[in-house]
Length: 217
Image (tube, rainbow, N blue to C red):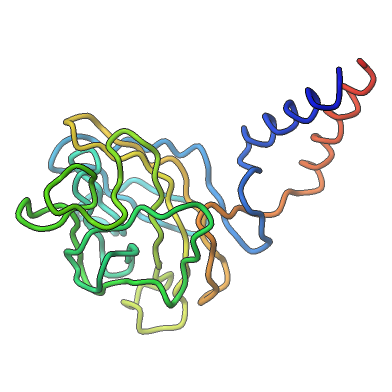
């Protein structure tokens, strides 16, 4: 096997485990969530916890509630998505990979909605008055967020920044929350798509792939 084929093979392996994204040390990354966002009024209630994302209910502790397939996004005060403006009903932005999410990003406060009022701007492309960085129905996009880890409404010093990889739909079909990444250290910004640095064991696996293909040349 020539070097170009080997390179493409290793890139394919890296892609399958998320290694094509920027790597950093103090990041929690949870891939393969594939949480369904039902196309109904209830949607799904998500509670972000240490190293996990838990599906809960409206009466339980929750941070983020996308519903109608993701056409409407509802958030708890502890979870603030990056928005067009500081208004709690302004559109949530679809951020590009590599965008910095930190204290200079535009957040609101309190409970918030995006897309709930058909007469106001929405985060979905193709809608009247859609936001400046809209989501395309059925396509993968990224939500940046601040998360108040200690749940005191942002008054403390334990606010962490992160991103969600999602597919949102406004055509009556369900959406998906695919993955989450967030910075462990409070107050430290994160690049959208950034994941933890690969472990020694993971590097060894990739090295083994390289050795295997070299021997087959």
